[in-house]
Length: 226
Image (cartoon, rainbow, N blue to C red):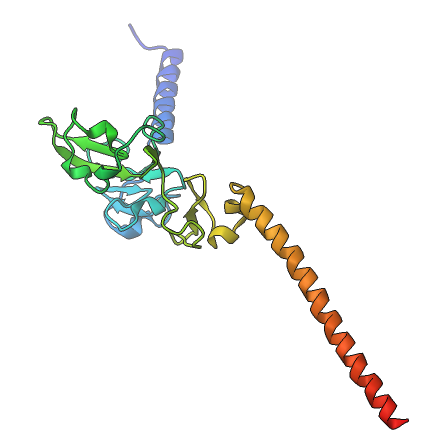
């Protein structure tokens, strides 16, 4: 049976659609050298032959991601070197603060679910890799900690994110003086409002006192002249 013009056209249309879908889902982000990623949007790192969103090997790797996300560091994960949100089933679950910084000593099925963070395990139940670790606060797993000095202006990453009073990371370049911090703590908002009015009142009192002293000495000087 000879192919008709219609069947040939449908064949090429199918090929075109396959290529369009493939290129849409799998863009040309392969690389050999770091410079190959200079024009790939939001993927500046050349790792494993592909341009990646973040670099799991660098210090503070999660700073490449948005607040509330972490950089996937397991090479055999399909999302390797991309950003993923913190797992909801881990945040706010019960945790044991004595397991802080002991992710690689956990045993799957024994104490892994009481650890504040995500750990991957080998088949023999020993720890393989710590994807991320949060902060165990009052027996609950949180993204971060504001202790020991909650009011200390401190940014964890170069973009100015800080641990806010709701124990989540957000952009607050100058700590408690940032609007991102204030919206989670009514106390500090009230404090700044009261402090502002106290400053204005003190300024008026000081300026008034200076004016009174000036006019007093001016009046004394005029009396001597008379």
